[in-house]
Image 1: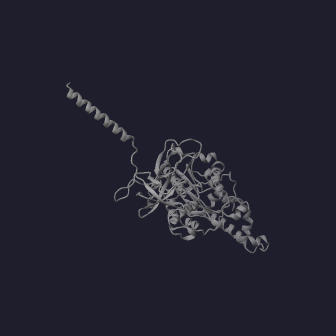
Image 2: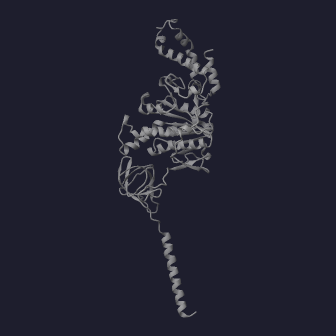
Length: 469
């Protein structure tokens, strides 16, 4: 090889080495990320410019870090609205120390061009058999001490509505283990019931009884907006180990972001839908629907939606049926979701706007009475104000007549209670009232039940008939 060829090879090797070094430098550089900037923070809402994202998309907001050796800190947020080129964000985590002009990064590819991204189809969270017996937060992260979740699938929080003509009818009885409900307010598989109660009248205890005693293959419990202490108390003392073994508990307590409270309710419903699609009969217990509405009110008012009835914006009353309608029966031959939603009545006002709206979209309601609770009558179910709209299709005529007679006797006594107590009623004046007075101690005893006592559906019906024979 002559000198000219040697020089050419050396020159080629030098350029190859230089090119490899440059390629290594390129690979070492962090990829360019599109970002926006925060321009305003007012109350619960942050405003950002420079990004084009759909409503519901996730973002990461850069937080200041005082230690240069640490990784940059970020806070998660979600797009809840937009105005012109401004995005309205609501943080899901703490944003203490947030600075003006902080960078905002999308958690998924941003949309480019004239049309929005078609890839955003809702947040996906873990679902599957591995969640049975577990307690998770609204983002699907474990809250218990049993380690990470096992092999799970994932499902979108935004589900496709079921064709109403494709749903199986409510035609089989669901045994909830509570005598008053089984006999007088019979519930069917796939029914959606409301539990209307003020504070301190035994609502959580009744929910725990139904969770332990109901004949369902899977139980999904959504604790939305409750006190943190109540979450642990419900799981350990009210639900118990037997109830938890076949349950999934989603907890979004009152101290988390309103976005996470909304997401917790949607996640609990998504889990119930997953098990229903597997052909299982699911019991969904959500405590409470009112806290869900309050979370939506916080978000809607923060982004400027005008308030309506009692400060609730119109979007609240659109969100409620969208959530509730996801429960119920699936297609014929499939699974079912029987749902119990608690509704808090402020000052025991049954005409509260959320209570009134929930009553209209549910398949029945069970009202708990403070007066009964204060007199030591548990469960404090007010039979006169409660109703199961699917009951007529579930029971025969003989039982329906017995239920009607029970309510007539109870109502006749309650309307004349004051006269009876002061001795102003003369026996023999009203034969039906005389019969009601004679039966009342047995009627009252029939409606009461210990929290660890189970009353099956056949036993409850038999005891009801025995009251009048």
